[in-house]
Length: 264
Ligand code: NAD
Image (cartoon, rainbow, N blue to C red; front, side, top):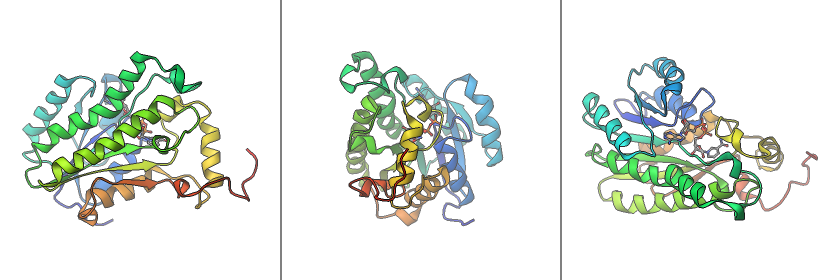
């Protein structure tokens, strides 16, 4: 372990269970000496998040549905009671109706387009808006995205469109907040088997394809993402903002199927 985040305080949003990308990130940050607070969505998740938070020495576990402005305000009000300032925030949240994460993008409904954009895109801006007010000494904000923002990936559909908008919002937020010493970045993670990913059609095939065709010839883990998050959220990343960092075993760099890739 290291002390890259000793004395730093951060909020982790989007922890559902010990498979969550948020968990890999939280472990890496806690290992670097950070004090963490957690938000979870809905009562059902509280009983999963409480013990995970406790494992990392945190007793700040607060509810927040990012689809609801009042709920986001309540989260930050409750956080302010415990902490007078915030050094970083991790937004590991996305949502789309899984019936539209298969089949054709062209068939996306207006209702699910709006919901996907609201929960997966706007919520990051809404969170950064509140976090900014607690980052008087500067800070670092991080969200999670996927390669489906850049290229068509099977079944990713409306989430690809949402992630493209999320990545654009990272750049606009970075410009707005840079003058105040607040950095805003995204990690574009390769496919990882999580609750959210299980809603995507043919996800096992996508995992295999990435394993066989990425330069590292493997999939990434939540600990790989955690390590890169530590870089972006600590002073190691002090000169980095508006960036989308690929943590995908290099998959984004290749142009076609590897010659040694087995059949799937
Ligand atoms: P996960 O299911 O563990 O986490 C998703 C989280 O989003 C859950 O904790 C869920 O409660 C939360 N959430 C959904 N709607 C919410 C709402 N209205 N209010 C508050 N929270 C809400 O899955 P994950 O894969 O760890 O997802 C985290 C992030 O990583 C997402 O943005 C996802 O798109 C992104 N990502 C995942 C992969 C992958 O392959 N798993 C790859 C790249 C990017």
